[in-house]
Image 1 (cartoon, helix red, strand yellow):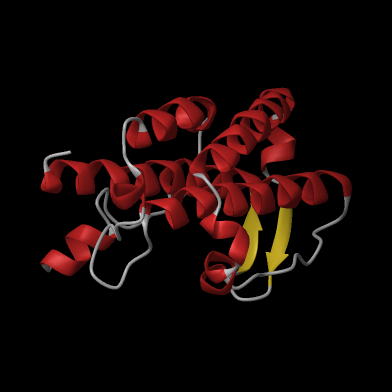
Image 2 (cartoon, rainbow, N blue to C red; image 1 turned 180 degrees about the vertical axis):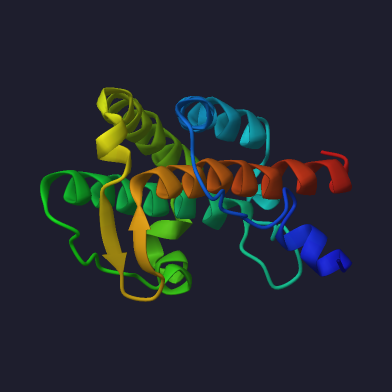
Amino acid sequence: MTLVDDLRYPVGQFKPALVTTPEDRATHIEVLRELPDRLSEAVDGLDEAQIDTPYREGGWTVRQVVHHVADSHINSYVRFKLALTEDAPTIKAYDEAAWAALHDSQMPVDVSLTLTWALHARWVALLESMTEKDFRKTFVHPERGVLDLGTTLAIYAWHSRHHTAHITSLRERMGW
């Protein structure tokens, strides 16, 4: 693994489990429950120049990472609800880089932190109400194919740790 890979994937790349257990899911749900705290802690005390620093050369700024997490998790929450209420729906993919370049990704990070708090309260409540059968429900991603909700939960637990680590590892490297 190169330094660029280390900076790009500070918690490693996502590796799906062949099977997810109720214990795995409980751990993943806990990661989602804690994300708003962890993300808020990661940016706490940063000034505007630091928030506008890319986490790696050619990467997003801390500000864009925080807004991306909110954008991505909103999309995932909607995908869960679609999969729970429809039979294997085909979801809409979106261009993450294009979204990160939109004007609202230049807003203060507090806006997306607040959104993430509210979103995760709803999402965790939904996840905790789901049955074993619910976690086997699927949706069709136009680029990735069929995904079940158990695997998708694992992806978003990883995604939470992954982007928080982008910020915390930058802070560590910069001595912030």
